[in-house]
Length: 215
Image (cartoon, rainbow, N blue to C red):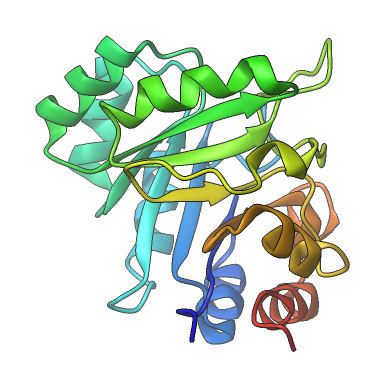
């Protein structure tokens, strides 16, 4: 019997989003600190949201090529459980951030073709978890949250030495198939549970998490 698939709902901006995600059984909630994103929150806003998260649900900060000044502010202001690096951070930078803040680090890696898989093994040496996402479309303003998919069969049968999470264009309609093809035990969704950019939808969140469990 497989363990249940764990879900991360990313890009939460309102207290009602926290309640919807945690009430539906999310294992992780994500806050976006990237000002070009419609899901961006300030450290102060994120603190209010994070304090509402019940025990046992991991609070993740998504940053994009963040400098130490921003990371220091997040660490001081927001009660976090994990840092997610969603930019072009090098393996060395990931290791440095992990050592500096004493928090687990999840590194996002964009995949479009088989040649992108080598980076996954490299980052698995330095990160605590990996987020395997679709590469952003050419010219995209955002490194994630674009609703883009990649060829899931690239991950079929592959395993890495650290836990990993599948992201990229997942929705309640396709997540069961994505899990079946990739063997993912963790999935991440943002735009796939929204009624408009940055607007999470309670019913879509519940339906998505139910679909991950084959319901």
